[in-house]
Structures are given as C-alpha cells and as structure tokens.
Image (cartoon, rainbow, N blue to C red; front, top):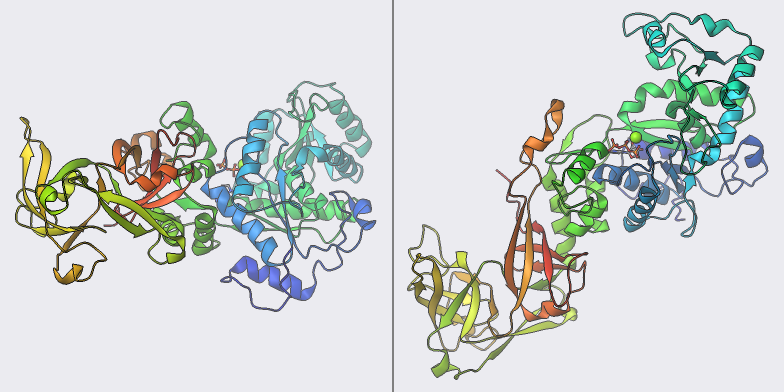
Length: 594
Ligand code: ATP
Ligand code: MG
C-alpha cells in the first residue's frame, strides 16, 4: 500500500473522481470505518480494527467473457485510485447470474488484471472475492426487508408487472399483492426458497413507490425463482438475487468506499442508496455506506467492446480466437505487442469524465509507440525482399568476402551494446526501395542515384533485371569506396536516401504478420449497424520476410523496432527460434491520419 497524505496535490492529473476522494479524505468521511479482514456484515466489521486502507474500490467483472480495453479503463481507474490514495482495490467476481458463467473466464480475468500490473484484495496472494459467497447474507437481508415492511412477494405475471409499471409519463399501479402482511410475505418467500413454486411464478419486490418518476424505484424485483445450477453453489439455491439488489450489498459487505461504474447505472443510484440505508438502519450493514459514482464508458473508434459482439467474431471465425492480435481484448492486445505500460498510459491520457465521447484509436496507438520507443531494441528487416547485387564487390572487397557491420541495439541507450551483421556482394532490400523510373520525390534507388545502406556503404544504382512477367528479380548497384559508416571521412559524400537491408549471407527468414485495424468504419456498431459488414478485408497480410541475424535470439513476446517499418513483437504463441514469427504492433507513423 502506498500512501499519499490527505491534502497533498494528487500525483496524476486531477479529475472529478480524484476530487471526490480527496474531499472524503479531508473530511474523514470513512475514517472511523472498521475492517475485520474479510467481507461481512455490520457485526463482523465492528469486531475489527480501523481499516488500514484509506479507501476501498472494486473491479467487479461478470465471469462471462474475456476482458477488453473498456474493462482496462475500469481496472486502471479502480486499482490506480486505490494505489494513489493509500487504499485497496478488490477484484470481485460478480457471479450472481447462474447461467452465463464459466471458470475459464475466471482464470483469464485474473491473469489479465495481474498482467496489467495490479494485485487485489490487499496482497499479492489474496484470492478474489466472489459475490456468490454472499448469497446467505443476501437472503437474510431479504427476510429483514420483508419483516420491516420494505419488500413483498408479487404473484402477478411478468406481463402484468410490466403493464403496471407504467412508463416515463405514466405512473405505475400498485400490485394487488402489495398489501400483504410481512408474515404472509415471509411465508411465501420461504416457499420460493424451498422449491415450492415454479420458475417465474412470483418474485420478491422492494416496496418503494409505484409513482416514482424514476422507474427503477417502482418496486424493483430483487429475487427471482430460477432452477439453475450455479458454478460455485451448485443446486443449493433455486432463487437468485437480481443484479440491482446484489451489487450494492456486495459493495457494502466489502466496505467499499467509492463504487465506480459506467453512466448507464446512474438511474440505479437512488435504489442503491435506498437499499443500503434500509439495511444500515436495520443494523445489518455498517455505516457509512459505499457511494456510487458514474463515469463515461470507453468508446474507441474502429473497435467494438461488447463481449457479445466479440464472442460473435470468435465463434464465426472472423478472427483466430479471443487472443487474435486484432482483438481489443487484453489477451489480444498483449499478443499484438501492447504492454501494460502502454495501456496504463492510455487510460491516464484519456482521463475520466461524466459525458460519453469517442476516443480515437490513434490515441491508443500513440501510447504504444511512445512506450516502445524507449524500450524496444532495434533491428533491420526486409518485408518484401528483392536481391541487390553489388557488381564491383569482388574487386573492391574481395571475392566471397563479407564485411562486418554493427549498429546499436538502441540509439539512445549505448549501454545495451551493439548488434553485428555482415554485408556481402548480395543483400536483400525492400522492393519498394527501387524504382526504375523514379516518381516525383523518390530519392531512394533508381539508376544513377546514390543511397546509403544503413550502417554500411554508399552505393550507386546501375539498373535492374526483370523476369518474363516484368517483375524485378535483381537490382544492380556499385559500391562507392571509402564510405563505410563509422570510418573516417565516410560521410563526406552526402546522399539523400538511407535504406535498410539484410545480408543474403546471414539474414534469417521469418514470417511477418502485418495487422491493420479490424474495422473500416470508425463506429462499427453505432446506431444498430451490422458491425460484421464493416470488417476490414485487409486486416491481416502475412509475408515472408528476411530479418537480421540478431533476431535469432528473439524471445516470444519480445518487442522490436524494425527500422523504418514499425514496432513488432515475436508472437507469443507461434514464434519459435527455428521458425520466427513477428506481429506488426504499430507502424512508426499513423497511417490512418487524414
Ligand atoms: P460488456 O458490455 O462488454 O458485456 P460488461 O459491462 O457487461 O461489459 P462486466 O464484466 O459486467 O462487463 O464489467 C466489469 C466492469 O467493467 C464494470 O464495472 C463495467 O462498468 C466496466 N466496463 C465494461 N465495459 C466498459 C467500458 N467500455 N468502459 C469502461 N468501463 C467498462
Ligand atoms: Mg455486465
């Protein structure tokens, strides 16, 4: 736990959430709060010491899919605020919905949070919390609400309930079951629990106000009958709490202080507060209760972030899996070459606000470039190789001789040392670096022009050979003597173009996967559009490249800058020393900018 004494300026750029937390710390809103070391009711926490965590936040995923960049915003926000203000952030699986959840997701979610750089629940070895552990308390709280006259069992059909709820301009109508006595309600509720009624036959509802202007306050359902096997509690329960009832209780049992959620939950806040006030005044939950604050969800251009839509891409084989490098999932971003530092920088840079907006995808890419620039080792790679033959090599350097060249691993970090490679009579260059008839502004290889082979010699182009189809098979050039990089007087000959290359003698062949955006439409699923139609048909192009010999030792997940091309990562799944595979993470410049 790091601690930032109250009153000190926030270490990061401020936002409305930081201001709320700083005010609470200054006022001591939660200073008398106790923490018994584990989640629990009022009596449990009363037995514990003053909470050493100055705030508690939580990230509460439903274990029903892979985490995506939108979740990363919520994770960095919740864990980051706890870290910055001497607090603790909880990882809690919101597993109150028995049908949709799976342990596969429980594991990947934990791995993703850890990979983003965070530990939960106060220590690096703590288990995540699980909402299903609170089912007993939720049931007890429901009985309390019934006894206190705050809840009733409603046997109207789902249709009747919907009609009687009213709508925006029309108040609701009280159910005929609303005036039952607490004793009658309790009996019925226990029958619901004891498997005595069919699924959907009745629900438990909070008794608030059927005329409330906020439809969420018109006696919301809090328990339903659902005979479904839960992945944790098995068949113990045939009644399950509704999300709107479960969530505030989960927060309160965990002594959360600041419960952050996305804007669509704003209308739920009055019920959140109502419920926790009732349960605090009944002595079931400790006071002061947690408070909910809403922030704008992340909308990223050229990306869809709904778990359902991402699942569709996977199951329809539009991508190779949840970890396809084009997916906005954490596992996909990671395989694409994103680092936790880049994602944290992105979340910091976009900030938090209370109004929805779209963040341009280039902001995310910019953060990746920025973090990789200082950390990624450099290497040369030729993505579309064609042979360059130096006609005077034998007489100037010697037949079959190779010339040793070297370059720093990083231009600004000489301490990393240098990489070595050789130049010979034949080197690979990129096809696009030669034009027999140069277009306007082209200053690389064309007959009569001189360029430098980076870290090597200056050469002068003399022509090319083509095959029967007109395809260039060889580019010809002559070495200019006394121009080797790093030798005295080598730069007395000024040339405009510098091109990258790889020696034919020591180059390694490698598969390079050139990824681009998955969608062509900046808002692929806005306004109910079919996002499948917006798929970019060229979002993956696989090429056989030649790379410099230093890449023989590349480890899976290691990041590189291929000079002049962009940032690449050795694929975390398919890369092998004997069969190197590199993924394009991001180009050196934004190729989508208008
Ligand atoms: P989806 O809509 O993709 O199914 P979800 O909101 O249902 O996502 P949960 O597992 O319930 O997924 O979400 C866990 C947390 O992540 C919630 O607190 C939710 O508010 C937050 N979250 C989900 N998507 C985003 C987003 N795009 N931007 C910010 N926070 C998000
Ligand atoms: Mg959800």
